[in-house]
Length: 248
Image: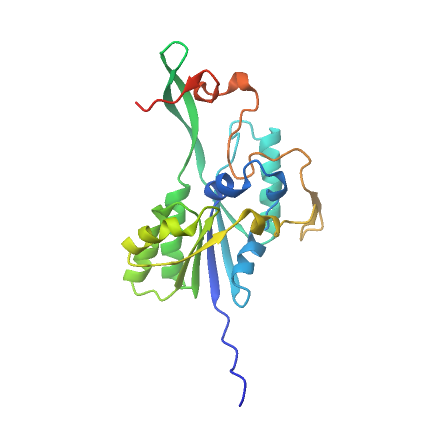
């Protein structure tokens, strides 16, 4: 009996929610932050062809483009782009938040940095890419289920791409009921911290231009856009020991 003929590799379009990925599996783990996104996606589809990886994030320290944070992020972005990843930048805006101090009972205001535009851009790219040239597989890396309506549109339009949702960290079982509410529009998987650690760029990365880029020595807290104030004097009131957050 002859062996079955191998199936034709499918094309894969991947969409990575950088902020969600960062906060769920990268934050506080330096050895995970030099992440090779293309290789990570390829590991999930070893018999298929990765045709596109879009990474949705935002520039940190936008008002100070020469800051160390921004330079570390730019180094990582250069390596990502050289590996084939398309960077889709949003922006970070300050939003006023309030919390109540335990010590005096007063409400305090502070400005909290909030990422904008990335979620909408990700959803729109899923739909427009599939309309322009439907891939065999649409892969989304995010635990933010606001992306589900975009996947539902693909199904309603009769676009026959397989739809996959990979959750960074967490237990996929918690998401099954919500997926069922959308008619089971996507298969669901998980990306763990160990998965991320297994797909890091080499410490020194040779660009196609011939230039060698080294992994930043300083802990790159903000490669995917998170703003961190290490000095407690600059933390928001809700991050101090004498304050508890009270919804208002």
